[in-house]
Image (cartoon, rainbow, N blue to C red; front, side, top):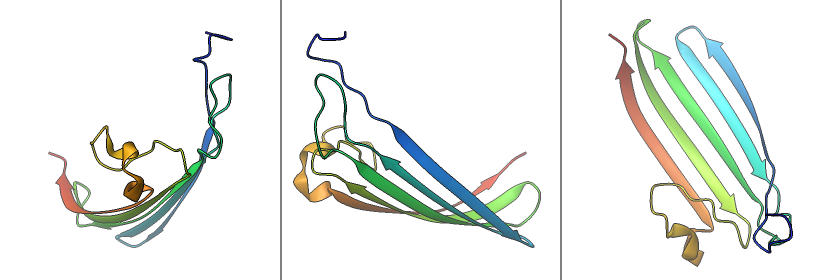
Amino acid sequence: MENSGNDRHRNYGSLQASYTLGSNQFTVQYGQASSWSGFAGVGDSGAWMGTFSYNLHLSKHTQLYALYTRLNNGSNAAYQLGGDPAAHAVPTLRNQHSVALGMWTNF
């Protein structure tokens, strides 16, 4: 597709760190996307996303968890939280937040 007018790409990198204290586990993740590159590249499309999560290990099979995610899109970025494929077209969703609470069990 090179030189077709449709080729574009961007790189994404992330870091993650976890700390466990007894039955408590804390995790931080940060990721950043660069601007689009290539023949059909779009400038200023970078975005970053950070997540903080907490897990409480109730047993070796059961955990409670809570996490908070913040997504900041660049002016032309198409990243979105949730499942709405048209969300990137809504300018108010440039900066998005998400909270999740839950429990899981392995049998």
